[in-house]
Amino acid sequence: MNPVTGSAREIARAVNARTASAAEIAEVLIPHAERVDAQLNAYLELTPELMRAHAKRVEERVAAGESLPLAGVPVAIKDNMCLEGTHTTAGSKILNGFVAPYTATAVQRLLAAGALPVGKTNLDEFAMGSSGENSAYGLTRNPYDTDRVPGGSSAGSAAAVAGFEATISLGSDTGGSIREPAAFCNVVGFKPTYGRVSRYGLIAFASSLDQIGPFARTVEDAALTYDVIAGKDPLDATSVDRAVEPAADGLREDLRGVRIGIVTEFALDKLDPASRACYETAYADLERLGAELVEVSLPTAEYGLATYYLIAPAECSSNLARFDGVRYGLRADAPDVNEMYERTRAAGFGPEVKRRILIGTYALSSGYYDAYYLKAQKARTRIAEDFARAFERCDAIVSPAASSPAFRFNAKSDPVTMYLMDYYTIPGSLAGLPSLSVPCGAALPEDGTRPMPMGLQMTTPLFTERALLGYAHAYERATLHAEKIMPLTMDAESSMMLRTPTGNLA
Image 1: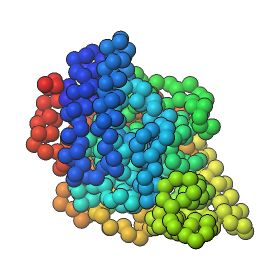
Image 2: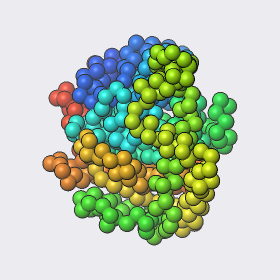
Image 3: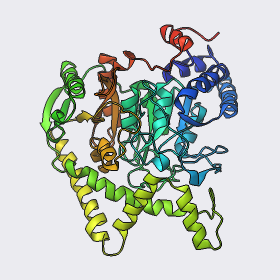
Image 4: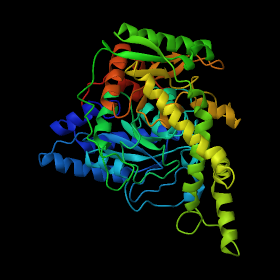
């Protein structure tokens, strides 16, 4: 078992068997993460002392006879989730210096399961973005090409796992913020059903859409993480009181008897030739694994972007009203309280956040609520109904996770062009469905010289996470796409680790 390149399953098994120690894993991982992150800026804050403290507790619990599902597994946490005693900024200047007084439920469940917190990861400010370019604390770089974006908003969480700076990580997905960076960074990114994972301790962007989920280098590790964090939480009124069907023990090796829906409205001829060829091969591989491909229709999917960019900004406008300089974070000097509000928010929020607040405030304003926000909610219902009808004909729907490979920094400076990156992921988010991205190969960008990773999106009906992860595992193990390309950030020592994955800790 290797502490840097090993899977969560391998690490936990070794620590529980006491053939490796959590302390040793921490001491190997900490300098490796520091070295790699100098190139990636995936982390806003590394927490080595906290990691060591948790490693000590894991060893004590294992020595006392406990078996922990994630014993000694290094985890990275998106910096819009609270972790007591750490800075929690949501990638924004307005929360500069804020130290979380408590820990988010999903994070607490990981730590209780034996995971070791490596640090808090970079993100688009308040999770608003598709590229990782909107953080107030600098760009996160793609481990496969540091001149390209890692995707957003969970940029650091995806890059940290792809760059072997953590074994698993937590991200949040509002309209594609787990799935798209997973596709760009050659990792698995999984968004569970809305309400399946507690949002307590997650700094809200759009409360009816936000959902926490895992990044991992394998579907099995994503399933292990999901099994730990899923379930009802009395601290979150939106978490669903429904029994969680464990996913890690339901992974399958083929797709025989599975009906896979190909969406008519998501025709691949809209993509560049290299991307189209990648997805055509992926669809053929699904058939080779025994799946039956059936055509389904989502006639309202084309309204997904317009619907999302009314609902999400409206909820953002409401949620971000609390950041006013009074209780926490940045406070600008001013002669009176109203001027202080204005100066604080002007200095603290970045351009994309301001843009969405303005859109949302307008959509909710008197005289426009019915014309925009209410109409968008009706469209959302139609989109969910279309998915329900499509699932009468199939067990899962597949599509691209992103319309292209990772692009160069500043290549999509026009907001509308950037928003179009979420074309395939937003409809499933509006319907609250479980969805993931699994590596499906690589395509040469039109402006590139090196093939970049691509991700296949799989979506299933509400609360069918076990089935979804099973389908993805079958595809992953048959194709092994994630293992065919390695990040450029792996140095000689790390590359040797990859070539000797069974080597024990010295």
